[in-house]
Each structure stands twice: as C-alpha cells, then as structure tokens.
Length: 127
Image (tube, rainbow, N blue to C red; front, side, top):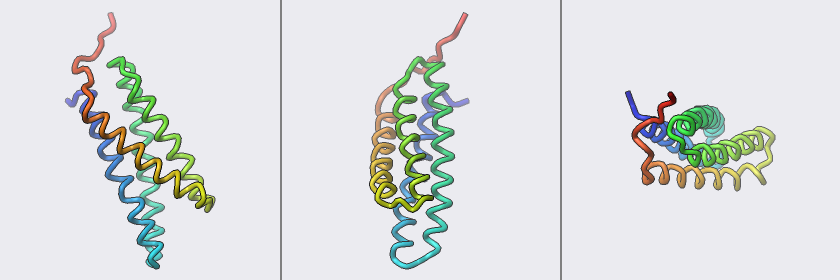
C-alpha cells in the first residue's frame, strides 16, 4: 500500500500531466484544427476530475498526517480551475486564458512543493 505522501504525489503528478495538455489542445484548435477544441473540452473534464480527486487526497493527508498546506494549495488551484472551466464554457476568453496560465503555474509550483518537501511517513493514530 502506498503511503499518504506517495498517494498525494501520484495524484498531483497525474494532474500536472493532464493540465499541460490543455494549452497544447487549445493551440491545435487555434491553428485551425477544429478537433483541437474537442480534445481541449475532454481535457478540461479530465483535469477537473483529477483536481477533485486531489482535494479528497489532500483532505486525507490533512486528517491523517496533520499537514494542512497540501489541502490549502490544492483548494486554491482547484477553485481557480473550476472558475476557469466555467469561463471557458461561457466563452469568456478574457478570463479563461489568463486564469488558465495562472492555474498551470500554480499546479506546477504545487507539484514542486509536494515532491521537494518531506511529508511525515507515519500516520497519526487516534486512541
């Protein structure tokens, strides 16, 4: 069984891989390949789903390891992702594009923090 730190690292890593594809798909669409928009929409669903899974894992880390920072950082990224998702659906590109850039950067910073900061290996046991 994976440790809580390993589970958090795995989900954050999957999240980063998924989100990095989003600007690529948007760029494919903007170069005239209209299938890029479909891939961008599918990618948005995947990124958002992984983000919500990451919230759950971060809550478990908070409860079991008494580490709140992964939850707070995840909550900020996922909140921005959610706003960005709906801005894209609404066609509000003035918000969707810059918030998308900030979301990618925020998630990459979280990825670096999760992989470089040690988390306790032992879970806190309640009596």
